[in-house]
Image (cartoon, rainbow, N blue to C red; front, side, top):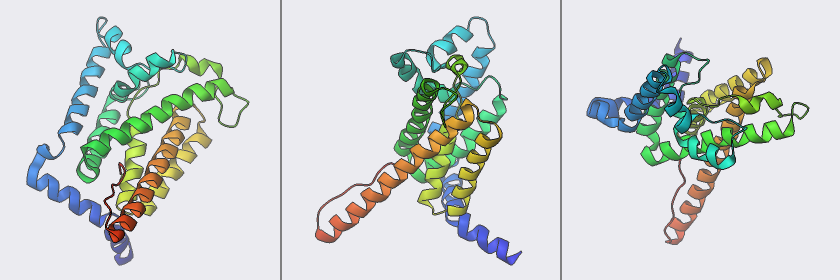
Length: 232
């Protein structure tokens, strides 16, 4: 028990302290973007189940690999807030509330938006590449996937979770997230699972860029020159 407690404190203690302090001090005001995201998702879900609302949601948030690239890119920013049709909406709401909320507190609002968008965009781009490669390629997809609606917050959630783990050095948790995504693809090698791996790759690139920027900033600080860090 002592070993488990020590591990938990080492792995999640600093993260818990920051999140707890922010929520106690500011309550819901600590996560305004997260609450907006939850609200958008709830509204999108409600509209999806109205005959007049479904075309609206489709026009602004349905992304398919078979769509023209410009249209897919135009819809990508809102696609995380359109719940995946095959999954219960409460799952999307919980993911957004917890992971977006933690990321907003620990990484900041700008980083939250950048990481969520880049992770989602990575999945969108991968889907097109996967369909083009075809099912015979290592990471290819069947042509039928071009018509699959690609929406929901999961890619953004994966990217944000990994960036939070990187920032707070929760390496065991990060490894668990990556292992879960790999296992998902092994068990069910579909579009969603492979997009999650694309989000993992996007998060890795962002974290590497941040580490490089921090290293440069540290060297510049030692030499007296200004520098800046990356999104995470």
